[in-house]
Image (tube, rainbow, N blue to C red; front, side, top):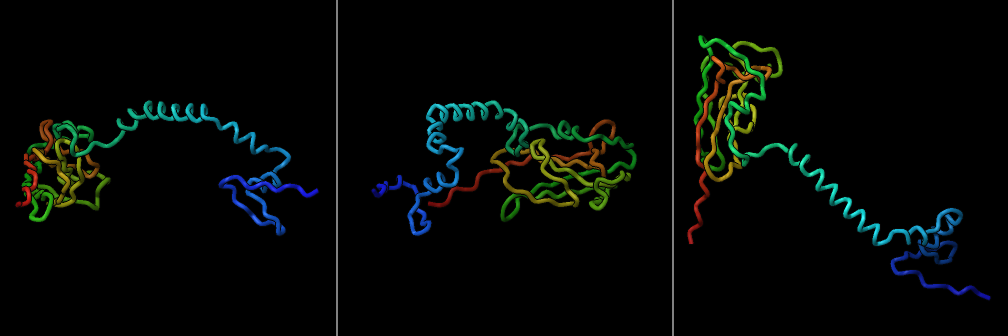
Length: 206
């Protein structure tokens, strides 16, 4: 008596073997009939297990979120800090007042977009090729800060940036030695600052 053929379950792909149609599930049972009961294995994936692991994932994410947020870098929109406070993350390099370098900056709005920072120094040499090397008197690079948050290193007398939030911002520049130590005179960093106001663009004419 011929064996009745059952229709494959919905989504069960049909594979042709020796001119006989065999479903994907049927092929699995042919390959591994000795140890794996596919129906029993699938039946164990129940709704309670799905709910349990979903809740566990949510609680794990809540538990780890303070660690992830706390380790993320600060953005330019962070609360303002004094540039000297942030610069303390670097070692200080005290130098005598006589012959010490000086720095002044001028921040201007760029004619196309963003802002330009122009740096003017005396008794100081920018030396990008010696960064991370031994310190040399009155030589090194500069660090630029926005509202006390370090933005970048400067290896020259000009820098362009954009993406400044609307409102008031303090742009600061410090002079740093080759090993990133900040030059100080009488305990004060050699720095210059300028406050700017980034206004929203004008509304389009109606």
